[in-house]
Length: 131
Image (cartoon, rainbow, N blue to C red; front, side, top):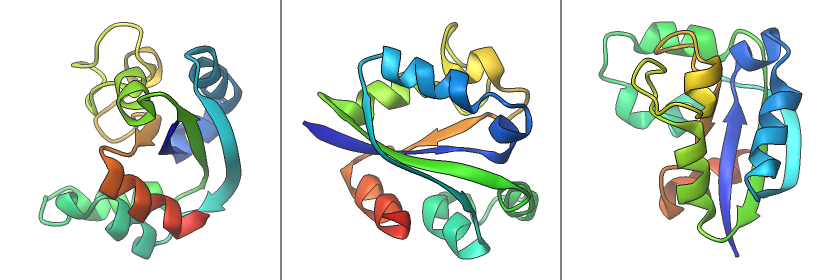
């Protein structure tokens, strides 16, 4: 079995969608084996989204990501990284495939409900920040 790191962003919790999103993940056949509520810091944001640092929206992203509690989790299952990534969908909800978490619940490029590790290296780095 493979594992994947996931994060439910502040907008997910502010809107009370965390249970519905977790249910979608579990219904898709991924088993959540660790989960906790955290408040991200800038250090977390820098580590999770290093490719966004040079982008003009980065400071807004840091402010949003650290604005409220988040839920971090580890899920496992066959091809967990690819499966969760497909379930979460494109980072822009308007471009996300119908039925994905972001197409269903995301409201903007920034407030797009969830994050999932893109590959094994990202999983190892991101999960080690919290677990």
